[in-house]
Picture (cartoon, rainbow, N blue to C red):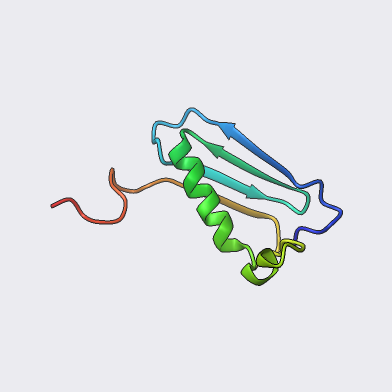
Length: 88
């Protein structure tokens, strides 16, 4: 988990992927790195990060604990040109 000794280093970097919703999320014990092509990809990365955090701990404004041990590496991009609902 991310401890109090962590520098709380969160980096957001722009990549040159062709998909505007793609992102890479790398979580280590001392830093979090988000790489995204656009703000949309960054938004999905932070939604994923939110799902990985223990909500009890986060809501009490204490140490952020991850549900899974670091390191965590996620590379995501939509398989189809739409997310959610199928086009109709």
